[in-house]
Length: 176
Figure (cartoon, rainbow, N blue to C red):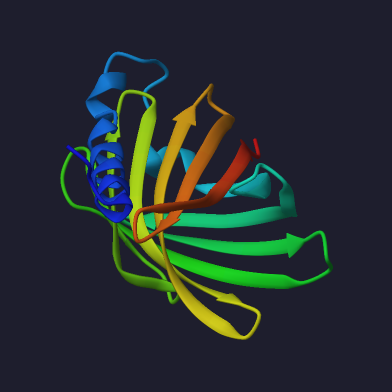
């Protein structure tokens, strides 16, 4: 049986979305990630964006000033990019229950939904990105892994309409 190419592409994209690892996979991993404890105070980060071909397109550093009041936290992020540009994002994160969080920021479309299990956090959200004078809504599948009390690693896969666009990689270090 011969399928049209568009149908094969659609089936491939649909099946690719089914292969996601559940965050519960990491439930026994240590140290246990407590977002309120890790993102409290100042956290520094170093990151890069790689396009779909693996080419590093942009490098950046981030200073995060974070504080919590009860179950609500504010993460004030200051970005310095390798091309000399700067930006800022302010996240408001609310703990929904023991392991689920909701996040908002000016450039997040709707809400980010996050779930923690063991040493891992998975965030899913749509980010509005301005590229060459145009605004694009891009899906982020964002995974963070606590390595120890100070270091966390982050890998975000970016896509649009299910098509892979690239990745953002970050290394966080909490200041003592």
